[in-house]
Length: 262
Image 1 (spheres, helix red, strand yellow):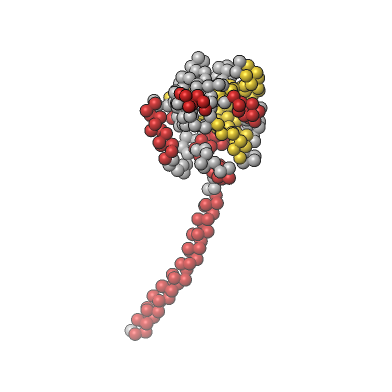
Image 2 (cartoon, rainbow, N blue to C red):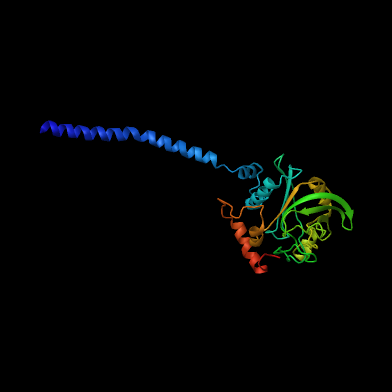
């Protein structure tokens, strides 16, 4: 009987020792598995955004959506991409010309929106002739010409039903006297165009010469109709951090009218 009891105690002690010895191996394997998962889920768009030091300059969501379209469209000139952020008021610099090859910001400047898109904020968008509104989405820059507004750049809207009437509507990039800091000081906002992204006169030539000839332009706005209609961007952006600055802008924008697209 004593022998049987001693044998049972020995078996229990051996079993407990075996579990303790095996535990570190299991922990190590778990750590290795977690490291592998982290490596697989690296976001190249986020990495590029960080490398270009854009966190205090351009909203990540705007950059991410622009790059999603860029990766599908494969523009002729892949070095340059332009983003216009219409969640910002016209009093702020909301045009960003990015050199993806050199990984730097080339231009950061004010830009006008269409006269019927809103006052200080662009909140209404259209693809219709005679609307005098801006159109959202992706464009390719085309040829330059000299017209009534001086040196100008034609745009080809790439999204059917959203901005594909840009060229027939003569939506171009051009300079304008009403797009200046002096106008902001006197009126509290920029002057507005017939739907074109108009630039300050002194920046027209350097910007147009930098982005002409088949670069991608993305006009961004947190517009639910556009997001639902566009085939270029993901409908839900995963792992997107909350942005209090965006939330504050949305609250102010609500007082000026909800963003709509027609």
